[in-house]
Every structure is written in structure tokens, then in C-alpha cells.
Amino acid sequence: MVVGGVIDLHLHSNASDGTDPPEMIPELGAAAGCRAVALTDHDTLAGLSAAGSRAAEVGIELVRGCEVSCAFSGATTHVLVYFVDADEGPLHDELARLRQDRVARNRLLAERLAALGAPVTYEEAVEQAAGEESLGRPHFAALLVAKGMAESVPDAFDRWLASGRPAYVPKARVPPADLAAKAKESGAVCALAHPLSLELGPNELDRAVGELAEAGFAGLEAHYAAYGPEERRALVELASRHDLVATGGSDYHGTHKPGLAVGVGRGDLAVPDRALELLAARRP
Ligand code: AMP
Ligand code: ZN
Ligand code: FE
Ligand code: FE
Image (cartoon, rainbow, N blue to C red):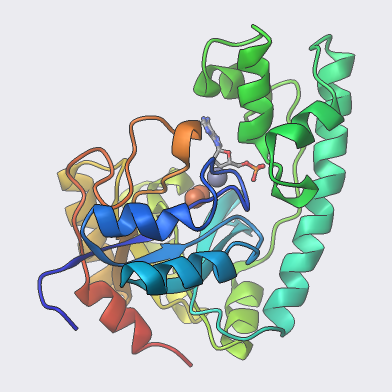
């Protein structure tokens, strides 16, 4: 393994709510100088095959991953799953259930928007996505912007789609310990994504991360593009206190999250590739 290289372990394609096709993710990773990238689409592994083939062609490693919404500590938290190399297993079954629930949630969300007078249909929303199971709130947000109902994607979330806003419809969430157990049975490991989204104070966050470590988590996303240097440093320490690998990534979503690039985030991201080595050592 090359010492001193960089990686990006948090990337979305249009297999979920990113805007680039999966094969473009390793291309962008290679262009940014990444030695490895992880494709981590929400609830799905559908982009991994195309991304894997292209990664081999451009000479970088593709880590097979996904991102799952978990119910934890009274909130929703996102969990990244890495090294999903099997073709079937309990994790795959769980993801299939989550995709079914996503489709049902999206239909309700579209009905809610229509009832609120927004000129948006479910069919139009699906047209924004690569398929029904790929559809997410960012597609609805982009559609609301295109229809002049919001100024930007974040504004569409603030007005309509975020938790507590009028068109919000919750979707199924998994207890993190269940996800960790299923990931383990499928040869994969879990890492807590963007930990500051939990909005906990330092002591509560420390306790929550301790619980996840007990549940078998392997990593914590410390080098997250949206975080400042101090936040990243504190999260690296937090990971170390609980013997978790300090992972990281950009959370690139193409044009659905402007200002974020693969590998470099907002320009200052540099996830050490040693993190991937350490994470791989935690595989069951
Ligand atoms: P979904 O899985 O369909 O509920 O959509 C969740 C996705 O929406 C997240 O992964 C983010 O990419 C995006 N998202 C959530 N909240 C916001 C927000 N306030 N502004 C912009 N994007 C958001
Ligand atoms: Zn997303
Ligand atoms: Fe996330
Ligand atoms: Fe993400």
C-alpha cells in the first residue's frame, strides 16, 4: 500500500441521490489523486458493479459500501458500511426492506407535497432519479427548485422536506447494533457517518460513540469534508478513545451538494489512506 496517499470513503452516485453515474465516481477519484474510493449510496449496492469495473480500468481500489439510516440516541444517524463483498446475506435482505420502505415513503411525500399545493408528482420525481429505488429527498428538492418553489436545494429542505417541515415523511430506520450484526454476517464493517449530525454535546457524544463501539462498530467518520480542522481533530481523538478507526470522506453528491468535490471536499480534505488499511484489518 502506498504510504502518504489519500482516499475518499463517502461518495454517492445516481444509484441513490448523487447525480453522477456510478462509473464516474472512480474516474473522479483517480483524477483527484485518490488511491481508493468507497461508493456509499443510500440503501443500495446497485452502483458497485459498474463502479468496480471502472475503478479497475483507472487503476484505483473500489471499496464496496453503502449508507444506512439508523435510529439512535433519539435521532436519525447515518452509518457507513464497508467491504460488502458478498452477493447475498442478512445485510442485503435488510437493504431490500429499506428500499421498499423508501418507495412507500416517497409516494407519501409526493402526496403530501401535492396536498400542500406544490406542483410536483411522484412520476416527475422518479424521472429525476435513475429509478424508483434511487429516489431521495434531494431529487424532490431539485424539482421544487426547478418549479420555482424554493431557491436552492437546502432552501427546499428548510421550507418543505427537512424533519419537522410540512412535507416531511419519516422512513424506516435500523437500530445500529442490528446493522452491525448483519454487516458482520456479510463480512462488512460499520462506521458512524458525520457524527456531529447527532447534535450532542461532547460528553453525550462520547457516551453514544462508546455504545456504538460496544455494538461492534469499526470506525467513525472524523475527516468529514463539511467539518473544520478543530472538529476533525476532536473527532480523531474521539475515535481513538474508543479504539475506532478515524475514517473520512467528502459525501460528494454531484450537483445535489454543490461545492463538494471527490477526494478534496471543499479543497482542504485529505483522508490518509492508512485509514483504509486499519479499517480492512477490522473485517470479521
Ligand atoms: P432521504 O434518504 O431520501 O431521506 O434523503 C436524505 C438525503 O438528503 C441526505 O443523505 C442528504 O444528502 C440530503 N439532505 C438531508 N438534509 C438536507 C438539508 N437540510 N439540505 C440539503 N440536503 C439534505
Ligand atoms: Zn444523500
Ligand atoms: Fe449521510
Ligand atoms: Fe452520504
